[in-house]
Amino acid sequence: MAPPMSADRLLDALRDEGLRVVEVGDWRHHNRNHKGPWGPVHGVMIHHTVTRGAEQTVELCRNGYPGLPGPLCHGVITKDGRIHLVGYGRANHAGAGDDDVLRAVIAERALPPDNEANTDGNRHFYGFECENLGDGEDPWPEAQLLAVERAAAAVCRHHGWTERSVIGHLEWQPGKIDPRGFTMDRMRQRIRERLG
Image 1 (cartoon, rainbow, N blue to C red):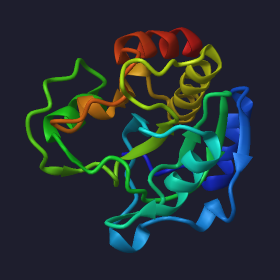
Image 2: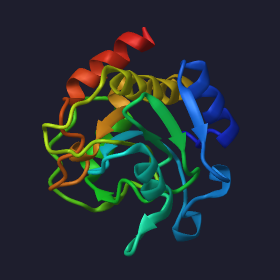
Image 3: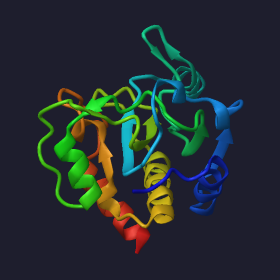
């Protein structure tokens, strides 16, 4: 059972991994903690935003939209490779997912198919939203992929997790397709190599 790292420790971990970090407003206190607990944490979840443009993407992920209030993640990774911290604590990013997948993440073993949505993922995962249209055609610049790798590795390094603690939204919740445009297997390989 891993308690979430503090907001300041998260900031330091991301910078120590070589990321360019942008702090957005009072991100340390922007959360959905009144809706339920934050933690114990067990992994990192990667998403795409279905948006174009860094400024509007960051604003959407910070504020949310009618029916889904923000923050919609902890950090937004824009195409230029920067990570914008928009929230800390419980965030509306993972939603309900498969308890078998959560058990596999905790045990750091191969993931089973996600075929049910019976477990609160917002409680257990750090979330990173990545600026991309998610249509399979919008490119993923190497600077952005490197930032995804570094952000996930930073969290894993702090908690002593391996790359198997990093999943895509599509591996958690039936019907989700994100992130689309790269494979999570390849991203986990990159994270494994970074962690050494």
